[in-house]
Structures are given as C-alpha cells and as structure tokens.
Image (tube, rainbow, N blue to C red):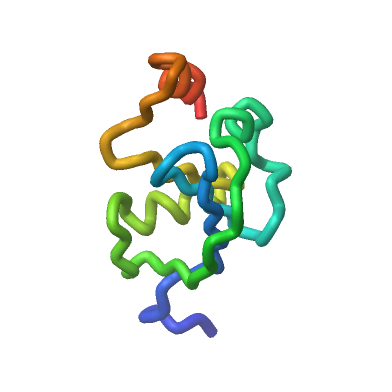
Amino acid sequence: MTDSTSLPSMLCFVYRSKKNHEMYLYLPEKDQFSAVPESLLKLVGQVEFSFEFKLTTERKLLRYEASEVMRNLRDNGFFLQMPPNGYQSDNDGEMNANLQGF
C-alpha cells in the first residue's frame, strides 16, 4: 500500500559546464549522458561532476520548479539549467538558436 502523503522523489546528478558559467546539466543517473542530444553536449562543452541530491516536488530550487526539473529528467533523460541572464557567446545567438526543440 502506498502512503498518500509521500512525495515522489528521485536522485539527481548535477554537472557543471566548464565552458559556460552557471550552466548545469542534470541527469537521473550518474555519468549516463546517452539521452542528451549530441548537439546539446557540444554547446554545453566539457562538464565536471558537481554534486548529487535527492529531488522531491517540495524541494525549493533557485531558478526552477522542482516538478519541472523532475518531469524533464523523467521524460527527456536530462535537464539543462541555463545561466540567470541568458547565454552569451562569441557566436551571438548560437545557443538560443540551437536550443530550440530541446
């Protein structure tokens, strides 16, 4: 029998982009990048493991609703946290143009 007061939860593994300040890639399994499109991996650049945590729908996140992150992890196999003021690169607009459809 399932307790109706329990909240859905999942482990979340967070990787920091070395190329793009304040850009993070969240994965539901450690070091499992197979669900992340190759074009997105190229835009994010090299990543390094930062931390893992238990994500629940009631957990407060800085920029996103936890339920949105969980939905993306379950449905897409990844979640990309963008920098707070958008992405700026030497190739103006490249990131935003290439993110359409993710």
